[in-house]
Amino acid sequence: MRIQTDTSRCEGHGLCADVAPEVYDLDEDAVVVLRHDVLPEALRAKAEAGARACPVAVLRVVE
Image (cartoon, rainbow, N blue to C red):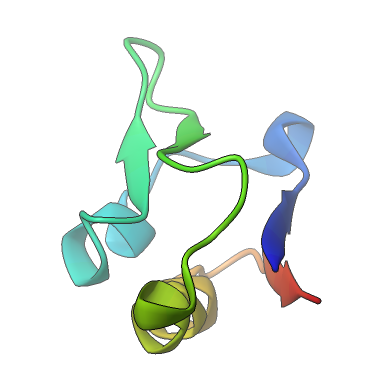
């Protein structure tokens, strides 16, 4: 399982990182950074919650 992201559309709101800091972070330009290349199953619910929190829908959890 992994997370797809379109960083070119990220507006740096940081809600994903607020909801799921174990999964998402922001770089110095306030663009989303993924903490895992392959998402551990234990973090799936957190990752999905963080993706749902994104107001511009740039995050998606995929198998």
